[in-house]
Amino acid sequence: MVSGVQIQYYFICARKLWLFSKNIQLEEGHERVQAGKLLHERSYKSADKKELAIDNIKIDAIDGEYVREVKVTSRMTKADRWQLLFYLYELKKRGLNKKGLISYTKEKRTEEVILTEDDEQKLDEIIDRIYEIMEQPQPPGVINAPICTKCAYYDFCYAEEGDD
Ligand code: SF4
Image 1 (cartoon, rainbow, N blue to C red):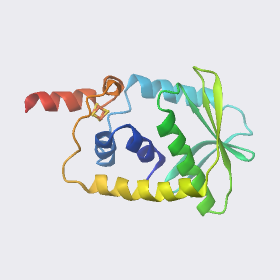
Image 2: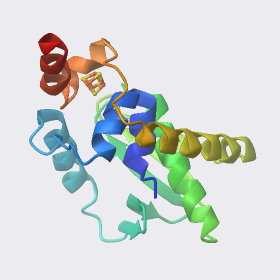
Image 3: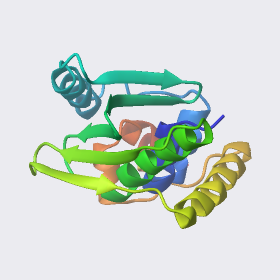
């Protein structure tokens, strides 16, 4: 079953998605991930905002008609948006119709996210594509993108390349 993190990684890097899906998870000690966890703890102290975990989805907070996600920066806007759309879609499949709000703390900006039928169709295609990537026997190639220097897999990816 596909998770929200996998949807996010699909938009960041297919190799990252593959490595993560094979349980090669180097995220835990990574500085940016720790920052995200700290942010998460600080952002959801309010008792009326409940964290929700159902099957493959783990939502930061449900706040009335909204599903809320808090991110440090808007650097991954597209990936963040699709991750939230995926949560809205999964909730809708379970009979819960919600809207989404993403808050970017660094930019002090909040964006509303509404799930459309087009988004649902696109998510079905994305999920199929994620399964195809996960089934590949070898990881997709490194992407040599600026984002790599911020990625927990950086040493793994580029050390491996250097050994070729
Ligand atoms: S370091 Fe770059 S190529 Fe490797 S998984 Fe991360 S984003 Fe992808």
